[in-house]
Amino acid sequence: MSGAFTAGLVVNPVAGLGGPAGLKGSDGDDVQREAVARGAAPRAGARAAEAVRALLARRPGTRLVTVPGPMGEHSAWAAGADHDLVFIAPPADAVRPAPGGAGGAAVRLAPVPAAIAEVGGAGADGGTGADGGAGADGGAGAAGAGAVAWDEVAGTTAADTRAAVRALSGVDLLLFAGGDGTARDVLDAVRELGDAAPPVLGIPAGVKVYSGCFAVSPAAAGLLAAEYGEYGEYGERAASPGRRGAGGLTEAEVVDLDEEPYRAGLVSARLYGTLRVPAARERLSGRKTGSGTLAPGTAEGIAREVVSRMRPGVRYVLGPGATTAAVGRELGLPTTLLGVDVVETGGEGPRLVAADVSERELFELVTGREAVAVLSVIGGQGFLLGRGNQQLSPRVLRAVRHLLVLATQQKLAALGGRPLLADTGEEDTDRRLGGHVQVITGYRESTIYRVAAANEEHI
Image (tube, rainbow, N blue to C red):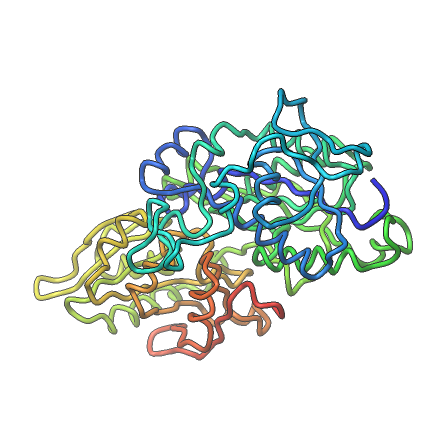
């Protein structure tokens, strides 16, 4: 492929499906069906469309190439983007190349389905409810704005992702939407391609996004892709000496967790390899770091401080993580390490209201009640919302209204002044959460730290 800067797009349309459902991942047909039963709906296509809009707004001349259906084409249509299609296998109908050969735009033989046209949209009242319909509170539920029907995306596999990457090997930069499992599939395909593989960049859309090859948000992915396209002369491959790739690429790690042990509360991250990505530290997530090197008693001190602040009759939503799990231990309650739990204190002592809840269950538990969300920070990345705690959707956050943020001084220092990040999938909510918050760093210790929307251009 030559001429204008060419960006490829591959979407794992079921990525992130298990997050709002509290399933800690989306691997496997059974897990995906259970997620749908719990009120979740696919959103990866909407996040991919957001990245494409940001890319084309910054660099309108970009040529977009993708694959048919929910693995890319639907997101391109939703973004209003002219695009070319590369077929993984010849389809029976639905699309055909326009006159003029492979360089022409793709022409559909049937109207774009309504669900596709609305991939990046919202309900008439500004949001959607947990079932994908209009939310009475005007906000997004488990499905969220831009969710599409399950039957539009069911049946896609890791093999499809690998095939799509191979089909798009001729692009200057390949954008892929998914989570850490998708990154592993992309890595496998890149290894098969060898020197023919293009550089890549991840659009965060999964439950777990701990690998360093992802941008901090969909819009950041689009902006970084556009900036990468501005180096050198159009049509030069990113790896060409002295051209777009000169100083413009870096190696980023691909890590993942085994989802079965992860659901059982066992965290064991494995490094699978590295991918070449555009170099821009401020717009890349960076690899998640653990809390294993913390001084003894640090989490316990934070937990003591949190418990000392708890008030009777208030429901406290404990997000996932080792620090919040220490709060459960301090209360003497069997809370989960990686789930979202709801606790309450009172005259009869602390009680566990519900453990490992889904977004739908959480919304019901906090609506009409005074509630506080207790959240820890992901080490190395700085994410406060949108990574592994998608149960705290925009509508839940509107019901909760108040946050207690927990982090050690070491974890904050490692961020090097970068803000804590919110990526709830709803820009208005992310902006509302922006500003400065008190962060509990120990017993009777706290500091003030900045929170920013992950989609902010300067991030």
